[in-house]
Amino acid sequence: MQLIDLARPLENTDYADPPGLAPKITYFAHDETADQVLSFFPGVGRDGLPGGEGWAVEQVTLSTHNGTHLDAPYHYHSTMDGGQRAITIDEVPLEWCIGRGVKLDFRSMPDGHVVTAQEVEAEFDRIGHDLQPGDIVLVNTGAAAHYGTPAYVPSGCGIGRAATNWMTARGMRVCGTDAWSWDAPFVHTAKKVAETGDASLIWEGHRASMDRAYCHMEKLANLETLPATGFEVQCFPVKIKGASAGWCRPVAIIRN
Image (cartoon, rainbow, N blue to C red; front, side):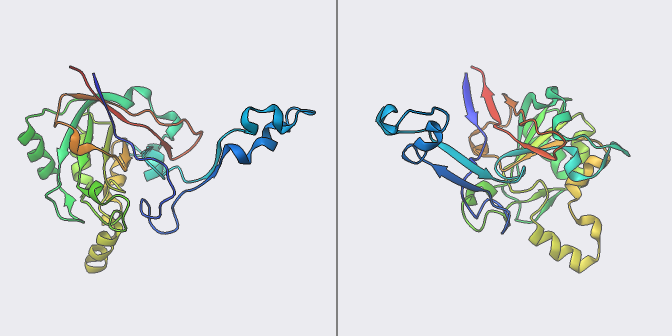
């Protein structure tokens, strides 16, 4: 059995999120925390600790959308499934988060391109996969090649509303992308909205959950190492009450 880590780490970087949205991690080493440990044990001095050391601990300030995470329908809109209350991340059924994996390769698409239903269908035909309920669809946009650089956030194509609906109509409930967003990068969408005046282009892939509920992962890693089919995905999110997303450690499992 081969396990492939599909997650990005939470780290101090300005290039995995738009400006001002990055996480902040403060690290406290063993030689800085002895007093914290000793505060629980009156009368014990630092010489009573092995090497005089405390513990290693980190203080983290972050959004539920930092790092690799799973978005709940509540993130996209207050409603889902044609008007029902949208579920939060703690309400996402666990069975959605484990399933047969399939990878779509859209690395040839230009940055900012919005993938259509016809293009999704053609890609499934190319790899010879019949999308079934419970399948977890991973999209390789090529954005991962720019991770850790200023080019990451504006890179990659996005999956449009019609394309997303094409997949959810066939029973897909969880999907994911190596890009910062399931939708096309905002810098490209903003130009199209300015040119056309069509505000429905904003976040159209996310808004597909208003029609039929689904979750997606963002900032996936190592998709280029996966085959198109023949693997399983497990991607259980951290359970945060009433939240729009939860950090997750998705893993692809290839069974020999």
